[in-house]
Image 1 (cartoon, rainbow, N blue to C red):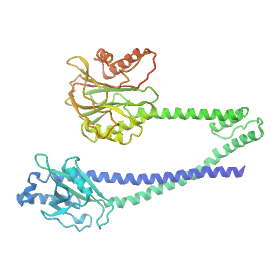
Image 2: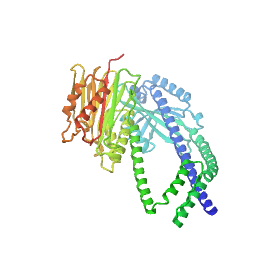
Image 3: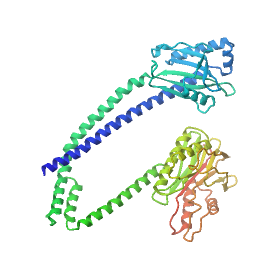
Image 4: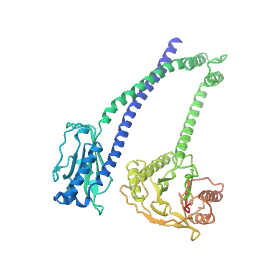
Length: 540
């Protein structure tokens, strides 16, 4: 028995040691890379603001004149300001270049300000008109992206250098003329020695802390598990072994420790000794499998509920609009979704979607789509651009050949202007207060998302007045079916919407849900039922 106790203790503690070691390594690696990425992001954003400010010093309309030797007084004044800015911002180089746009393979220097003291470097200033080849393809691609105004800025990281230079980043922003054309690039090179100086102590600190906590956990686990788990389990195991060997009902194990679960287990062993071993094994397997499935479904349902807004009122401090959404899956989890959020104080994104399947696969696809749309929307752009991005990303990782329909709109709350796009989804229904009616707002649809790459989506616009509403839904509403296979239909939905037209968004959704339930009756729900409604209100 003692030998068996030692073996169990070694196995349990060995497992704890292994888990703690893996945990320590994982935490250290994640912390290291998270620290690095956060540091680089912070430096890139702050350097972008520096470069954007410096770009305002240069008169884009006179770049060609500077290179021709004209406007000398203005040029010298700008050069003096850039020299001062370079020193004040503690950056290595502030320079302006005009890139050869035929192949972006070379550029000519316009302004060049050096501050060698900030990073103990030995750079020399380029003279006006100095021509140099582009450093590499990375720079060439970033030059092209900036000249074609595909991005607001670009950043090149040089954290590992092999040419004697110190680690640094270079951020580039466009210099534009009065017509908005890019005529040059403002570049700021900034040292990032702090990154290399800070990462090693950070990693050592993380690893030391993890190791210390791990040792403490192991010591505590050794004492705790032996007293409260290992010894009681060995006692219970001994009784089970005795029964398997003797096949005779025992007198009971009694109390084995302070935990109810272990005492209950001991009682269960005694109670089950009268049953057949085969019956116990079959029952245990069946119960375990059922619990596993129920747990997975419950977890998936909770995750899905947390991925969409469910707290209302959603914006209690806003009086210029009201919004409400609801989702009733046909199964424990479904493929429908909706979402809304303020991009800024004046722009509200709203969208609704329907995945081609149901159950856990559809729920996973739905959550990926929801994340892609929300993340891309925050990056800016109109709905058509956002859907192109979402479609390409879904297609690239869509091994199960699923697809999703999406209606996506951005509402300018101050004016009521709505820009929207439709990726194969049902048309919205819009209530006009001036006409006092709901009407189906038919538009040209784009292709469903996730089935083909590089699809083009079109924007359409319309205006909302105070009191107007937008009602969005998935096909589970008009295609709700009664026991005789009759459809609820879009026409019936619009008719019921007009009966509820003076209700709030929540009242409209609750009313339509009641209408669908009344129509369906006792028939089972075959599809997810998802709706979203927004009302524009008078400014207060």
